[in-house]
Image 1 (cartoon, one colour):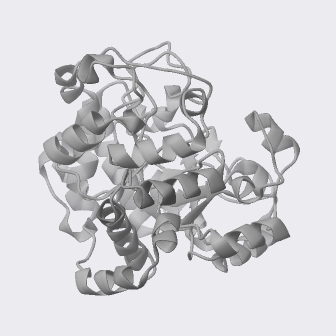
Image 2 (image 1 turned 135 degrees about the vertical axis):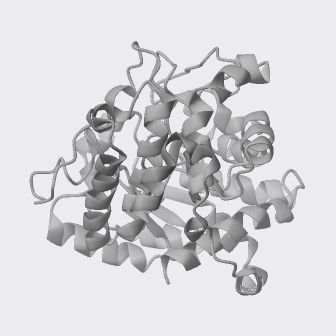
Length: 381
């Protein structure tokens, strides 16, 4: 398999890897879907951080979470979860102490209502929640930019495979990696060396080989951040960011890596909270834009698998929308999974209400839940 991927080279944007498509299980998924309540369906569409499931925890900046780390499930989480199922949980560095604690936490998370998938950001380099923890004895993978400089996609495969193997060992399902952004702006403070290259022809084969490395180790990867976070100057964790590129310009750069991931068969693409005014004619973040997600990603690029929002507790979202507005708005735009709403209960209730009052149809909810259930069946085979 690896040899076949490597020989595609830049032609990856037109070569396919049929082994990576989601197996057809339509009848089984439909039967499951028909038995689910609306609340169960909505729960599948929200992947949360632990802290948002505990209504006693209030925070304004990420440092607040680091100063008071949550490393086990609380009674408040279990109480909330009785009525609010959750489709996935993402763990951050402060949730992870050492191997025994992580094993216990993941075991408890597996018992939650909603059968949540376990997710993490373990890209390599500076974004590595486990490898950068001295209590874990794993091979440390350096920045993706250093791998890109080698020009050898086998090194990207090795990086994904190394990371995938220890994530599988510890019980994770999904790694929110690789970064498919093309780092074209030297003033970019958020992507930088997380990207493989400033050249899409170098980055594209790296992205798909990293994905294959993860897959061969038993981990599902996620290509991020659509439509490309590499040409911005500001950090969406803390506020608004935008690119002035036109769609034609993106087709010649950013879309090269995303097309490669789509052709390979990636199961998840994560959105960016960046404005794209030269494409949409407004400053609405891509996560909230049907032009970007439906017109461009779904229809023009032909992507049919899961669209997951970047963290909805990031400043680019919270400074403009409430948790409820953001959850409803991104689903209307085409998002399947709402990641990390700041207020989990508010976001959940807002989506349920939107279906009840006709703002969102239940069939629209079903479209996303079908994709999520298919992925869960694939992961848990």
